[in-house]
Image (cartoon, rainbow, N blue to C red; front, side, top):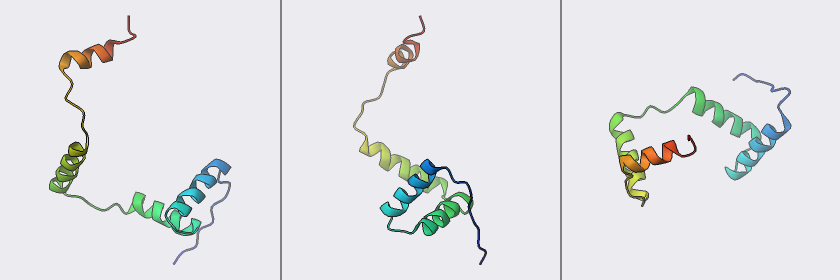
Length: 80
């Protein structure tokens, strides 16, 4: 296995990394590996699975559908 050294990590980014590691009960090193794996080794998802996830998320939202007029009014707010 390769070893990589990260240099000059901005303090705020390092703090975020430490907080994420703490929240996920991992070391900073393990959190970095996890982030890299998520970015470079994404888990493929089928269109069916994606549609099922979207449907499940929509089911958790209790908002009503907006009309075209409501969307246009919101979009045009402040453009006068």
